[in-house]
Image (cartoon, rainbow, N blue to C red; front, top):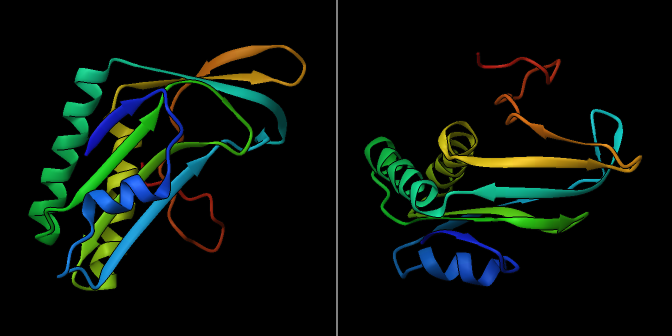
Length: 150
């Protein structure tokens, strides 16, 4: 499942898209709307996408996951429209016989989604201002937590 939607994203729909009797691990990632960005209060977010292109890019990411980990059950769904604080904006699921590959592939898929899928985010601040923002850089766990891969 590779989908752009205006509907609420549920864990069940994403999990069901990838689970199977050979899956010893199903990793789910949910990106949610937080109440601040870099300390600035967020009122809500607005997402836009061109669904045919976005879904095609999601499928390409699944092919990358298949080549790297030999996994063929990946699901990605991203919501568009106005999203309130706490709502799920994106979900990624990966099924694998073992947890290590599931975790690694899920993180990779989410990082790639942020890098190459044409989805645009507009942050509306609590003070009434708004701006379109570029995707966040991909960060890795390091002692300073701010070391970027680029």
